[in-house]
Image 1 (spheres, rainbow, N blue to C red):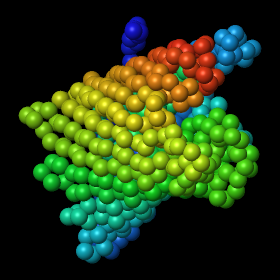
Image 2: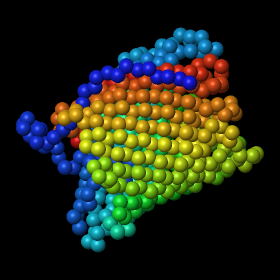
Image 3: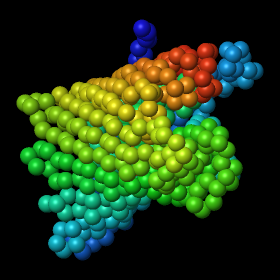
Image 4: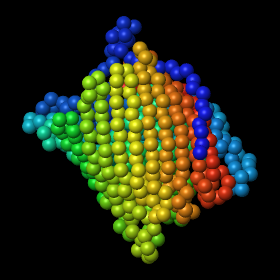
Length: 476
């Protein structure tokens, strides 16, 4: 049993009122700043008038200055001795995004269009590569996701391409869009922590799920209820560019690629032509010798209710995600397809918002892939709250999760147990400009697994991580 003892720090906060901005001589916030390309949003913006086409181009930029200290700050060998390396505690990072959208409406009310998210691919490697002007040869723009959609008010919306899972679009309570501290453990500050010490983000609304090609349907609302479903035939990336999902070793190419900590020695337009064993491999497969822990024919369905009970505004959702797995043509299958149940709830009472999100089932955790048979199922809880005080906002996030972790290499049922908290606050000091603070603390444990070196071992089975980030976000 482990206890987390932590001193809370006074947070600074958020609030932006157009009337206040105008009183200070600043222009009012424009009406076209909805973040329609967020991971959990398919269309978002209001449809244009019939017979017209609207072209929207938006930008976001995050700049973070942070301090990180963890069990991997001083490098350790598998035998537990120091390896002579040491990580810089203070870091600066910058992430840049472009959000283009073309939308139109026909005379019969049909809405249709395309949208995308473009980012610099050097940011995939974490804070050390997250500088938009660092001169890294791999620092180019990449289409992170792209989709096309059609929608009728009485029928619903169909999206094809890099759209989020239906249950990820409905997800609430997981603090994915946590405003108080730029995402907490799903934000930028975890980049200040060593990879072996940073907590996994196991919730389904992440790039490992929304970047893949799929077809998604979301119904209209009926008495507060709406429904959704999706189908993804193979784990194939939806657009050209970097194929990393926050892991090292990926560079460029087209096709469905899984990732590891080493890399692909030769990349062609169809994927990884020559790879080191166990590294980047094409996943647009039905079977392959030796098998792969890669999902295929995955599907999900979800339902959501939005309403109110007196003064309490409520959103409740639930869903299921299932899949097949790339088969083994030479011997028995060692992986199990995804089978994950997802539930969440959010409540708003005045200036207080709080909620919780829970996932459980057969999945690899943060990798969003099938896990090896006999390893630990995922059991992940995320909860949090935000409170607005005048023009300020403060919040807290809590994570407690068990997953298969790295025990696929050990063949045991020793799960990876991760517990973490995040505190934060933010302040919008001008239209489209926001400053924020986040403080993170987390611990990880997996018996028999060297978490710092990513291999079986009796040492480095426990890690501790601390990070403090001060950042600025521009949204135009």
